[in-house]
Length: 462
Image (cartoon, rainbow, N blue to C red; front, top):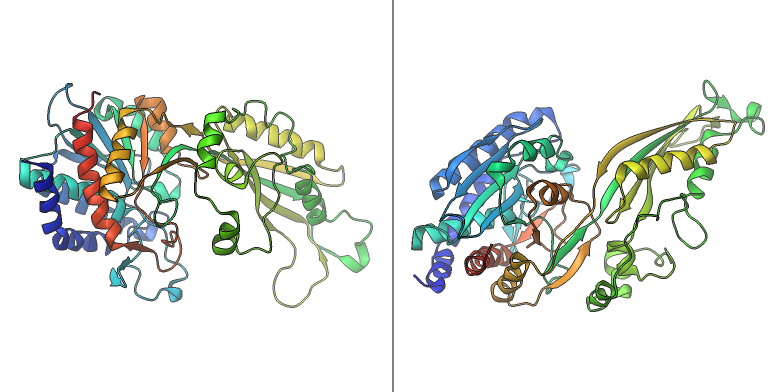
């Protein structure tokens, strides 16, 4: 049967697919708290049964150190057909502050063309589009035209602990020619974006210790080096006057942007004034690292950010205290070839160089993630371009993501498979915030886009 017949079947099935998504969204699968462990089990069980109902084969759970991966496959043919692994995650963020939601977070609600509910965009609505696409193929042709493997994890929102060894231990079962990840957003409301890479991450904590206990500032101020002051002095020295990270060796492995990459970024419809007005809301943009545009700095250059400083008295009113200690949270976004563990070592060396003899410092590495780049010439990327053109009637752009997705380098390194970052959300979907939403038109178009992608992949050699 023709591709048109599959798309028509998907259109006819829209009410049923939306109802299925509602069922999944009603399960409060929050992975970050033990009190939701039964809900995580319910969500995994729901996916197992839904995959089986669609017709996927070898549906089962893959154990991890945390919540299990839900796995299912459709093997349309042997090695002569491409095999695509589709990644998603069924866990969601907590809903706090709940009183800011305009409708219950786990009672999906449609308003003004949007589906509101926790997980609607991140990531249940996006990955479910691929399952709906498979069902449309099953109803019309008996199954998809390529080999498919679904890999739906339950720990993405708490850092995916144990995911890397789970992929390593099941590499044979997960072997594929490409991985598709739909867990992000368009560049803007009209422009799809195919990710060409993600940044890595090194997250650090610094504890600055001074006196044995809090002191009265009237009695000891001027004699005791305040740990908060020492901390901010050290933090301020982590950037130089040109906006560069002032850690010796930090840039030694940084891969320079090629002329082609910089040219591609210049084609992105990025308006700095609009970015400042509509997304940032600050008085002005920071000049940042000299020699690079704002778009280059937020997507393809390494950065260092201070996330929080804790210590002393911060409640209402006043209290004149010199705190015994201060704790600072700092992360560094990394680009290809930078090694997270090495950056942690260089960071600690720098902090110890900056620390005055009046305080003691303890430096802790909290988490690591590698950076990754994507080959835009891979057959799967080119199939995604065609799918966006037809499914959304829009030309996609190529650009790196400024964020971090640890699973991307896992798939690259362990499965040796190119990753297609093909997302369907919008920048204002309120991910991780109250009133998360997903545009209904995007949900339906994403099903069509997935169908077209699978059809395109069938015509391309693995």
